[in-house]
Length: 103
Length: 238
Image (tube, rainbow over all chains, first blue to last red; front, side, top):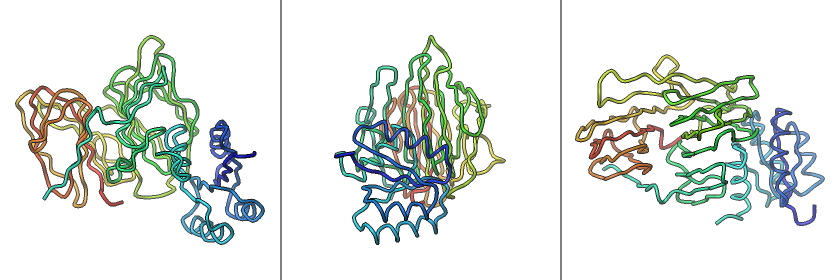
């Protein structure tokens, strides 16, 4: 995983999570892990410093707000971004945009 | 006073993957222009051509209203809700991604390209139950009239989405003029020219040019040559 951008994907739907992880992990520069729900996401962030947390669909707004607050307390510089999808469309652009790797 | 923005066809981003040729009016995939991310709630306007038998493998969507309008050929869709559909010119397809769904999109035919517009609109409601629909577009009874193909209302003509947006297809004969009135205060209109030449409030536009107009109640469209175009009336704040 050396030099790869590590991404945590938080979702609510197992099959969609698998699809997102497959697409992200197809990129050599990225390594993505997925969790279902807030508790597991916060626990993961306590034990590991991800560069990006990607919020998938199905999370209620209070859950998203809580994740942002809790995770930012642990890692203030982390990027927490919404996921809109689209495979090579917006999904990749979301990551690059957060990292500032596209001009 | 009306505000406007012009995006000429040649200024669009693009991608040529061999089997896929795509033009992006707004930032998408490898095209990123911070000044061209969206027009109000309109986030994506892609003008795609896919070779015979090829297409987009399984990919996810969340919390977006996704509209596909075929221009030629046939596009086959399969999704995680169990829907299988094919759309052809004269039809429109809509998906509300909501809490999340995934799908594939393939050119149904082996021997011809499918050309289509794919449009993404931010919804006005998050985490709705994912939904798929496709309908035939009504043929206008009179020449030089607009045909509504999308609205926020399930009872209205065309498909519906979770946003205060209205789409109309227009077809004008050379020299014809119409006035378009925006549907809602705070909305703006983004006009994408499919064929021919038009002028909007005097601004000349040709095929695949895009023009946004807001802070106005209405505007005029005049055809300087026979023309077809799409008007996307969307909230500027959402």
